[in-house]
Length: 427
Image 1 (spheres, rainbow, N blue to C red):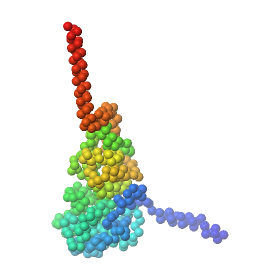
Image 2: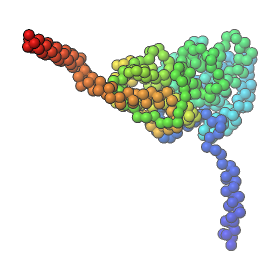
Image 3: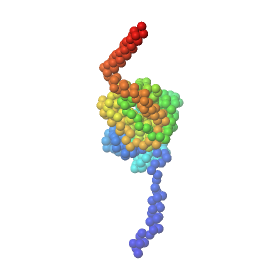
Image 4: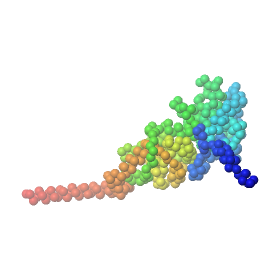
């Protein structure tokens, strides 16, 4: 009887109901900073993991990154001192008001208490703001380990663009405005966007940028590339059709041309006539890091606007082996600082693993369709076959031209002989 009462259906129902009421959705509407999905992270975990500094709660406390904590605190103190009349309390109050909104921006539950979270946000944001200001003004101080070691400065730039290593952009805006509200007035302090764009991309005009539309630094990197595009950005609910590799397209008669070597936009692929134009891309260690993190952001936050992911998918088709890489290097499309052509092929072949495409760049779909139609055209196929069989080396080309010339001369001689015979018989 007692055992039956301990399992009273009403009591169990109440417990289940309480459990159901506490359930939270997987992601909130405000969420914009994500743990990289396990399936995507598995292909190259290092590309998503900070090497020098933790920013935000996800990697806070990582033993490998603790050495930077003191330097972060030095920068934080000096930023607050730089602000002039503003007290530490005013900065703390600002972050305390924003903390619930900031917490909602992360995909994972933050295990830190509110007080701990406020401290992490404040120190990390002020550290970055001081870093940006020092870079802009080219300041260097004796206690500045970052400026003393170029490799550390380079690692910091990479780490600040990682999707898991972010703080919402509105926090930087609020703290920067608070620090220089009375000093700004157009004297001495550039806009926050100008600081950030200059740090990552060099001198850059920020007049057509809206800081309110930027979620964080990874999002700013993606936005930077989209803003450079001169091609229309529209999408269709279609999957990318199969596309031949660069070598196969070349053998089918497609000509490859590098677009303006100084162009900053990677996305502006073009195909017209016989020519596929591709913007130049420099491949180095950081290239895979920022490509992977932009793709991860699009998978989580921009599934229907995944323009960077689309670009990597097209390059994945074009690059199957190291021979494709060597071909594109010879055309000036790829600058390979990785050295190994196999490493480049592995990079692009790995970017598409476990990536989902719901829609695709309409311009890329058109280009792929036109390329496939070009390769299937009987005339183009015959010309490509002749080129492959008879003109694939300089010596074969010379021999083929000589053979054709000899054939033409033989035909002319034969025709002349026939004419002479005919004329002789008519007499």
